[in-house]
Length: 479
Image (cartoon, rainbow, N blue to C red; front, side):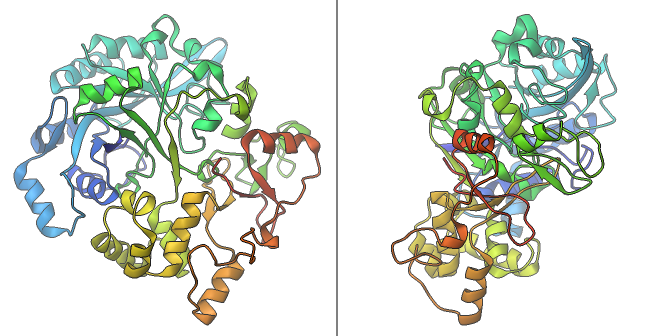
């Protein structure tokens, strides 16, 4: 079994970290517990030159760092045990074009099994646009035609639609997308066998749309900095090879599901207007005619609303076609909440490195590490946070219109009590009533419209009254 993150970027993409080089990607993949990582940006000539200089062939269709580079990072960094990172040739392409009297802005992930086939794709795309300008090039090309270019690269070259629900740049997004994958890719749509669901949705949401039944649902990080690698990933039970991985997505045999954000943590889960800090439920968006009541401009319709618009079944009717999935909160964010300091603070970073050294990779800590081991290695509070996360007992301030949501494991009252008294508790006891129920402060309160209750029922989400300046809070996001 291995975890794969098949959507990342390099330092040559806009708005990315200068540390996005192959060495740092390898370091962070091993910290996170990601065994196979996309290279990102293979259409950019400078990045492809680095790929050719620093990577060498490994298993079929995969690459690894040169031995001297791998030895250097192992000597400089204390990495969790595990196989050195394998890389897979990948790039995200942005296409902008007119179709059906509408401007379409769609992002796609392209994969190639070897350098020769990647070069064929690059040669064709270089005739269409300037690939030097951005690691994620923007091309005036129909999505169907980009798929044709990919297929012309040769056997084993594949295209997967990226973050399909993102409002502005995706195949199914509310602002510039289509109502079906087939509409986007036309007569070549049969060559699409998987879709990337993005940070703001999860498999249960996606499976309410029956037209997606034939696609494997994959998750990736879309990392713009090394530390974001693995925030979402896909799981495989296959041999370690490019071809086995792609075959698993095509047949579902050997595909082990996904590791997800809680979808409310994504930047576009709900509707809203970031300029006015207005977050809206779908019913509220309908009531205001999709315009912000503060500034009057159109609101951005988020993923929750868009999925429901295309949904033709409810959760109780979902087909049993997917493996299980897990919803995680990044370890640095959990440590930040536990310690009461920022996730980039020195205290959190030292704690992060310490627990990785004592327990294992982040993926192992979040999903598998025994809680008593975490308690001994760090603290009872962290162990309780992991227990709640694994059970889906989280408090979510949903993201909207480009603003990430906030996922919390404790109430402020719980943390204040713990920090002021320093008491130790048994796992699962903190903040709970004697009968084990959720505290009354977190119990569901009604929303003024019956319509919204139907949305709540559809997603299995508990809605809470706004508190402490939060406009919308959700509890129990894992369904």
